[in-house]
Each structure stands twice: as structure tokens, then as C-alpha cells.
Length: 215
Image 1 (spheres, rainbow, N blue to C red):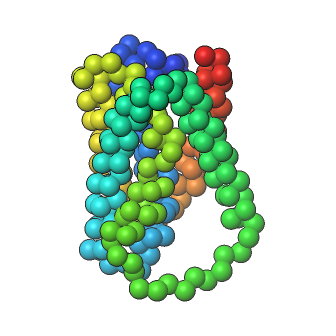
Image 2: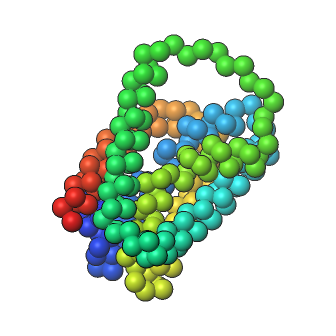
């Protein structure tokens, strides 16, 4: 049975770790980063490609962990109710997911102009933007981490959320490192997974909005 993001956030200690991983995987996982990674590493050699992947992973993991724990502090300091944060994250997730679906139709309808590629940019610059921000570290992903950390009342629960985030970032790194070798397979599979994931994210965003409004 599917468990919505906000529901299992409120009952985090009662649900298996696999469900927490699955929800964060949808928001922070590798399916949405392969396409942008191919674009920013086009023309780059293997060494530069690895550097971009490693630095993007490190920056993203640190940003998410810092945002999760600082976000919980600011929620308490400013008295922001968790349902309001959940509502904000749901709206952002819905709009971004809907835009991504519409962009796929626009991209299919419009001819692609030949791009003139200059020399590859520095690894750290590309790793920071656009790979870490906003491709991997999304606003709704940050909102999810903040809410989950806030609802984890024990140190063990918060460390578990941190471990899940790190595990997903490591998975992202592995996918980026092998993306070139599996480019043909990914080129066929990604549009299918992307369409399915897009619909799931739109529905998930609406469900989060609905749950937050009911609260």
C-alpha cells in the first residue's frame, strides 16, 4: 500500500526504513540527474567527468545535511508550522514536475539547433551549478529532508535520515560514473522512467498539498 510523504513523516518511527528511502529516492535520486550530467560533461574527458561527479556528490550531500538540521532549527525559532512547510514543498514539487512533463512535449515538437561547444568549464563550477544546485538539491527535496528531520525526535532517527540521504548521494555518484558506459541503454530507458517518474511526482505533489491543507 502506498504511503504518502506527509503521512509517513508523522509516523516515521512506525514505518520501515525502505519506505523512507523510496520517498527520498524519488525526490533526490539519479533518474533526474543523468540527462543534465550528459549535457554538462559533453566534450569533457574521463578525468574531468569523474571530478564533476565526485564534487557534485560531496556538495549535494553536505548541502542537504546542513539544510536538514538548520531547517529544523529555524522552524522552531520562527514558529513555522510543519504543515506550512509541507504545503510549500508540495506546491514546488507539483509545479516543477508539471513543468518537466510539459517541457518534454515542447522539446519533442521543436527542432534542436546545433550547439557550439566551447572548452569544458572547471569541474568545481559545474559541480556546484547546475549539477548540485538545482539538479540534485531541489527545493522540494530540501523540504522533505527538513520535515523528516523535524519529525525524528530522537538522535537515532535523525542519524537514520542523514544516512539515507548519504546513501542516495552515493547511488547518484555511481550512476554518474557509469553513465557514459551505459549511455545507449540509458538513452532508451530514461525517457520511459522519466515519464513515469514525472507523473508520480505530480501526483505526490498534489497528495502533499492535500494532506497539508487537511491538517
